[in-house]
Amino acid sequence: MDVRTDAGIQKALRAELPGAEGDSGSLITIAHRLRTVADYDKVVMMGFGEVLEVGTTPHLMANKGEFYEMVRQS
Image 1: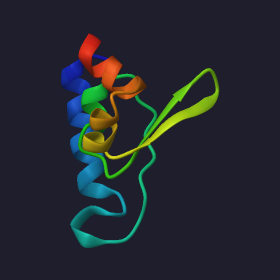
Image 2: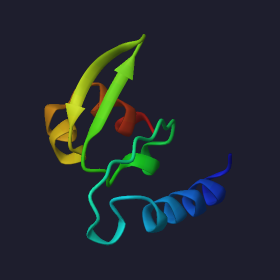
Image 3: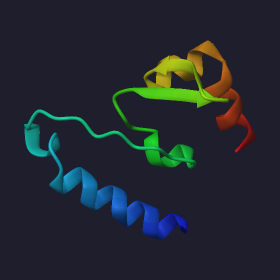
């Protein structure tokens, strides 16, 4: 999927699913583009079937772990 299509889908999901407009709910996204999850409340970084890191984007960037390395290389 190209970046433009991905952005359109993300916009629609955020507007229509639970959690939009103050409703309670959760959205779980499996993504290969960092841009897709950059503003999510929580990111779970996985590798080889295991959880590597969990946190907000600023927290993960400050830890300079796996997430940080992916951002740095992108």
